[in-house]
Length: 230
Image (cartoon, rainbow, N blue to C red; front, side, top):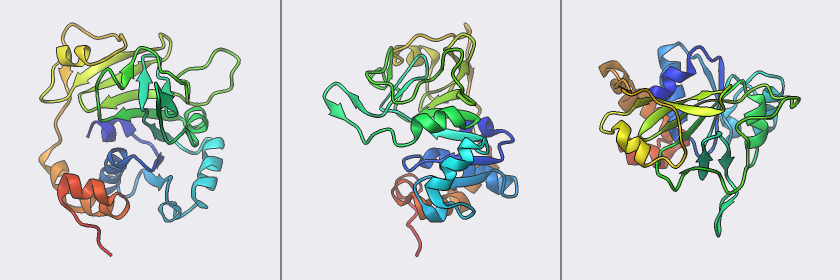
């Protein structure tokens, strides 16, 4: 639900191959808002019914027509840099179009379900896509927020630093601080992330779960026990 709230009035949202949670939030919002935002799935040609798959999706982003994109990372640091290439001796799948989309989408929401010092590091080992750019660099977009399994952080563009906005139910501000490798701003008292409503839960467990199963069957089966329909 926190991701759905962050989307606000976005018109066109793009979601990647390993992004079932953002896709779920977009699908929920679309059901509630009569099809808005339009959702494009980066990994599937049929997930882009009005485009030519990923190739045209990058064209749309370059034209400034993608409002929100989602990026995760094997590592994310306090300056909103992400690492999708390598850390230590471990190699990852690679960056694909992450750097391009980070610059061209109007807003980028960073996300990672795992919230540990292994993921949220002081400085990424390799910058796959930078969180900010120096003056004189053409850049339309940048980070809006970071969502993890424990908390929501907002991005402070002028300070180039995250701010803790809320802590998810079942977690605490002290726990978030202990498990975050980078420093960030926070009030003395941090609010709890609002829980989903009864209506939202019904949509998530019903029509949203069925739609998500079409493109992310493993996720739908693990979270809701929904089998992909043919």
